[in-house]
Amino acid sequence: MRYVFMSLMLVMLSACGTVAEEPDVAMQGLLDAAKQQSSASGDCFYIHTVDSYRVVDAQHLLVYAPSRSKPWLLELSNACPLLRDGDALLLEGSSGRICGAAGDAVRSRTQNCGIKAVYAITPEIADGLKAAKKEQ
Figure 1 (cartoon, helix red, strand yellow):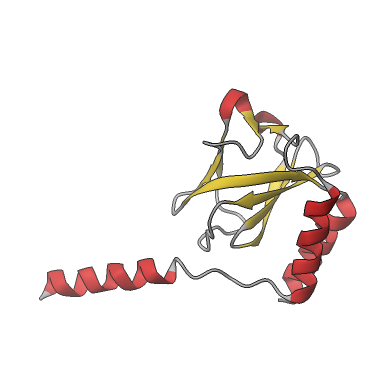
Figure 2: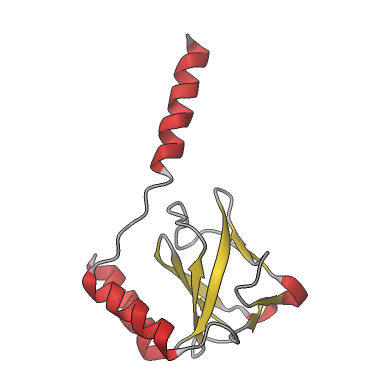
């Protein structure tokens, strides 16, 4: 009986982890603007230059590298709803860079998330994304 209960709890928890947050209209507009402003094919940053990060939603992170004046938008391959601001994150990429290439990933104690694309964005768009998140 105890085994069945634990199995059901694990199934319920894993099902909860797969639900993606839907960004609101303002947030979606800013995400679209960030992606249009930047070409995802050539944008990369060095992992050792990361200053800080912010979780935007279940599928996007803001990373500041090499300083808070240089924001990057990371689009994750799948929703990672367990990532939280303040979590210790490990960025993995080839040659010490994050470019959205196969194998680039964000890892926390609770989730491993592939990185689909990297966008160099303006500080104004980054500020807009943070403000839109606060309003949610």
